[in-house]
Amino acid sequence: MQVKHVRTLAYTAVWGALAVAVVSYGADALAGLSPRTEPVPKAYANATELPEALSTDGTTIMVGDPNAKMVVRLYEDPRCPVVADFEVSGAKAIRTQTIQRRTRTEYVLASFKDDRLGGDGSKRAVNALRAALDAQKFTEYHAVLMGNQEEAEAADGYTTQRLLSLADEVPGLRSEAFDAAVSTMKYSDFVTASQTAYQPTGEESIPATPTVAINTTVLTGELYDDLFDEEDLTGVLIAVERAPEALRKHRV
Image (cartoon, rainbow, N blue to C red; front, side, top):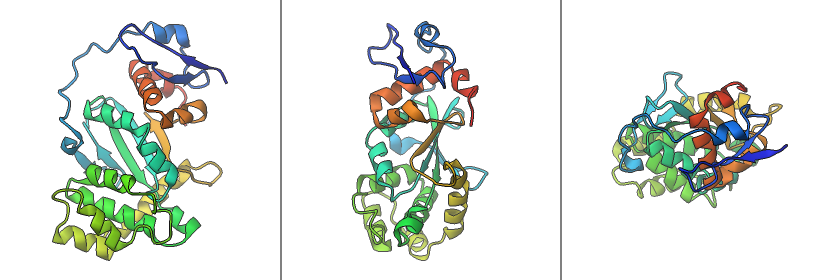
């Protein structure tokens, strides 16, 4: 599949690789798009200011401006090393766009790694992340877990004690309520529901993480490869912001 790259005078970096099978406009049309001109709300100072909320579906954790026109949905299992690779590479582009209020990030947290590898670390981590949402510390705690994920694939990688110890790295997160929620698996129903919500995204019932969708379209092929390069994914996000219908026509 041919991959097209587009540039404008307003941007010095490549916008990103947009596959012909996904983008219907072609390089010429995209190259003529001008930079965004409509007013943009003042950016959040940093990730700690991002609003966090549980969607009405009960399984999606929403981060960022609820009125953002572009939505990036991330399907992640906390024990998946590929998720960790994504979080230290392309995911930085999504965080930047979210802080700038250009996109809203939504998380659906899977836990299938427990069944594949044994143990219950994914379930415990997802439960702890849900508890962090109560304290409006989901974004910060999520970053800490991903930054300390090197041993998480092991069956005992995310024990209750380790999850509590990592929570110490997020100022203001530890509390009697948070510790109790982590220790007792308070949100076990959420863990189960989130895994169920994730399952249909896997091909032929074989789930994989990360799965990333922009405005309901799952990125596959060359676009999936762009998830692991911050500059390339920035380009994809900017191009879709300019021409959202390019992906909308190919929803999955």
